[in-house]
Image 1 (cartoon, rainbow, N blue to C red):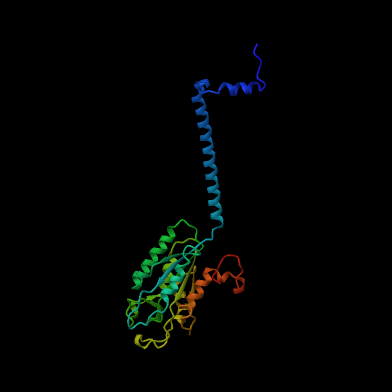
Image 2 (cartoon, one colour):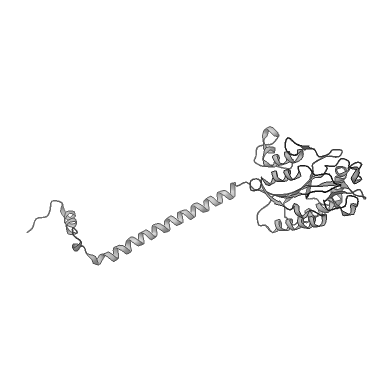
Length: 280
């Protein structure tokens, strides 16, 4: 009887498939199916792992991504004589627009503010769009830069470029703006309206001896009768909005934008460093 090779069965197996003609070709389809099945299971496992990783990443992003505050930006189109120019107003709003996607979601609707009625309608449309947005909003800001004045009835008004400087019935009362913002169905969302409208101290060509816009603002807020709207003014009674050639902005616009960008949260500036900026 033939003796076994010293390498045992392994040696016999290796010698058995030394030539192609010695292979058992009847087993090849089964082996191929087994390899394909193993590779399919491996691919499914890899895809499931990638999907789980993406889901975890998305959840973490939702939890830790800073919430952006909607800001409706309104800068009056260019004024013509006899109105004085609204210096650096476009620059104020361009700086805010630069924060879009970081701390703010900026919506620019300035072009519709040639007249008060068209402008107010565009503001209402934008607020309605925010109301239908499914994103959770803690606050919304309306930032308005325009010339302001007091009409014949003593009401604080904004004066769009298309209004008549000597016919105050063509001006837009501040109370109507506040009522439009207050009427927006934004749930528990807090609303802030910013008026940078005290650029004119006196203008004889407009019949303004003393601009009482800032003085009449408190009465306008009371007349509006809205409780869920806060108002921030760029100038107090007796003041006029200053501009800065150094900043190439209005003074108020410069510090307002910096505050929203995060400077107001710094402990050195009186903040608490919690990653949030409040009205105070």
